[in-house]
Length: 515
Ligand code: CA
Image (tube, rainbow, N blue to C red; front, side, top):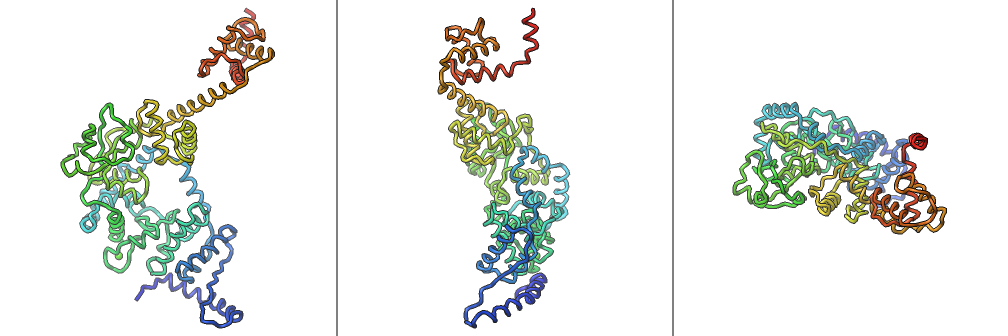
């Protein structure tokens, strides 16, 4: 009845040898009872103690979860962690490409013409899949193109090794153990043999790059040959992608996005991810750049306004189908890439408004600093993690609103500097307020000397506070952006000495003295 793959049969044959030894050992030590003997799986060391320890524990959990011990043994034996995968995983988290770099690398004229040619080559198949699942064929082709470059991308990793490495690494252990269990189930049910175990570094399978759990629930046997072949069968690949989107709420014949113009005095804070009826956006002065017809059925749809690069960049109206693409990969730029490719395959044009590349973008480390600074100013961005999520976006927006800036929630290097200066200003003002007043003639004289060097005070350093010294302190306070208080404090003394140390070398001063 069940199709037993070659992989599975080989694995069973392999286990029979080791298994018989285990049985012999048990018959010698265990009294015969009706209860089944506990399964003990043993693995030769991978050379990595942490990995070995994770594997021993996971093997138990896998058997307890109902996986065939023979399969567990077969899939986990001989595995060792792949350091390339861990470093890929970490790099991905640390490097953030600006949105325009990401889009411009992914949506190229070559990629669009390649996709359009493949759309034509498989036209009948695409049309049939589109009709059955109600999902736009160009979107299916867009995902296919982004995931594996239309099936051409070499999958250079071993799925069990990739998933085991990431599970053992521990940051998302539960998630990757779930994937491994699903992969074991795929093998047990004969869906995948060794040829199908090639994956991306993250363990994603086949041309649609399904994780194993998604494969089990979503892959489709389009041509009815009994296999859900997302590796080599074009119909199974397209239908599986379509089924994924359909099962996550794709609406037949609804648009994905439209680029729009915003009126001059537009309130950018409205681009905060809130869905509003299209009629409301139109009422706010939002206009299609392409002449897209916002007629009655469209007016009633709810849509979000999206500013991928802030107020100075393109503005997009996103319809619910855009959100469905995001379920494939929870990233706005991913969904935008797929949508722009799909538009290109149809012969449509790209974005009208150029990217404002001059405003720059922030790296993880800087995002971390931004979050810390926002928190310090009372705009809660959550625990700093270097990720630009909704809390941070909202905190940036609230800061911008308070400062009377366009509240687009987009973090630039200039904004980071501005926020950090504000934090520093607040810290320094507090330091000056709470600093001890200078009491001794020696310390006052030291401050006066510094103020003379800084050209804030004329005359001699007499070690006594008077109106001239107070005015000099006020002038210096203003020069370092503090409220003038005229108070001689330990803080002001330290700041003045620091400012002196930053003066140009005293060569010029000597010359001047000689004159
Ligand atoms: Ca098939």
